Image 1 (cartoon, helix red, strand yellow):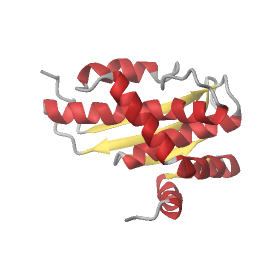
Image 2 (cartoon, rainbow, N blue to C red):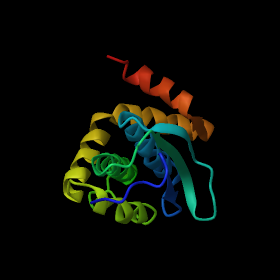
Image 3 (cartoon, rainbow, N blue to C red):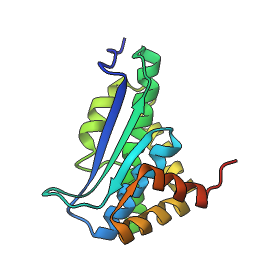
Length: 168
């Protein structure tokens, strides 16, 4: 049904476009990073380092997938949810009620992985929004730290997350 993944590791790099402020980019990237961790992705780093077309970047990795159709669907859905979380966190910060969880940089990932998902884009977007809202305090702390230092390693991200949301 679904083609197997060609590798056992899937990585994604989201970038915040240059259209917004540094603060909006921090919330965008923090949204990707926090939701990715909550979905058991490894976050390598998250940064506000500017490039010619972006204000920030979040590098995530998910290892260990064998490529069965069920695993691909679960992975695709998790990847889509974290992809939508960045723009939704930015929209919450900027009070933009029109965001649907996609923006220019994320549309290619959505187009690539949505056909592999079993759930609808609407359902996945609702889950992404619930995760952003449910972890808003953590996203705010990560965004603040990003604004202070510019780059956060995955290990540092986990420390921030566990400080705000202690493990159960």
